[in-house]
Image (cartoon, rainbow, N blue to C red; front, side, top):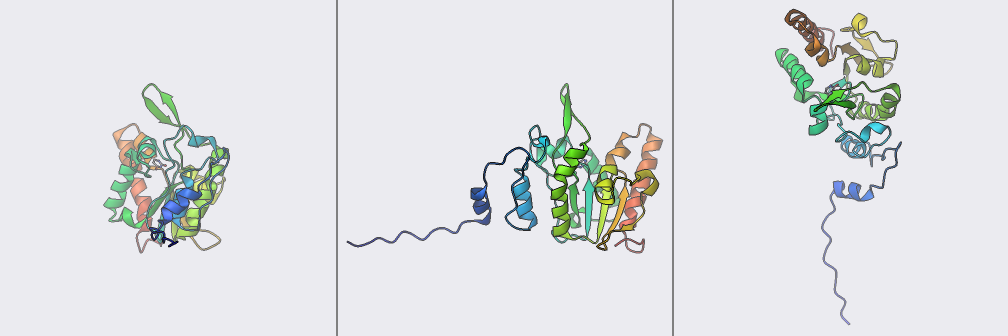
Length: 231
Ligand code: URA
């Protein structure tokens, strides 16, 4: 009897392979990335359940930007707009960040932008979801993702936006208001600097205070420009 050859198989896309490999993730665990690439990390982080924040959040908000970015920004955690869109720094704080960079002639598209914690932590008040700071155990649980991002991108410089981001890189003794705008060098040679979180600027009540906080934020970011001891 003649045997019929089965038709050639369509090539399986890498993403489909990964999806097929995905097994149920238990609470307290995260799927392993299939390789060291940012794409694989982003894919694995979607299923992360290492801390309880995954449950009320809409989705994991992973970092974005070129794999070989020379500068990597770290924020605290996604806010409401980021949780809904899946992208970091796209809400009001992100818009202020974009404005400050544009004023300095710095192109955000060249930077990798991420957060210390990848899920939105909030409490519901009426119709709004109010940001709540991630606690130490949530920050510790999420740390593997930031470490993997840093290892993959290998930036020359890290800029921390706010105290939570700064302490995730520079340790718990870091004092933001005393040490902001000062470059430090990590053991591996990476330069690190911290400034306030853009939402700190937005939270200032009076116009004068807000303008002053914004001007200082821009002045800190200007240290990224060549000739200012930046990278
Ligand atoms: N605040 C952050 O720290 N990160 C975001 O992505 C948005 C707001």
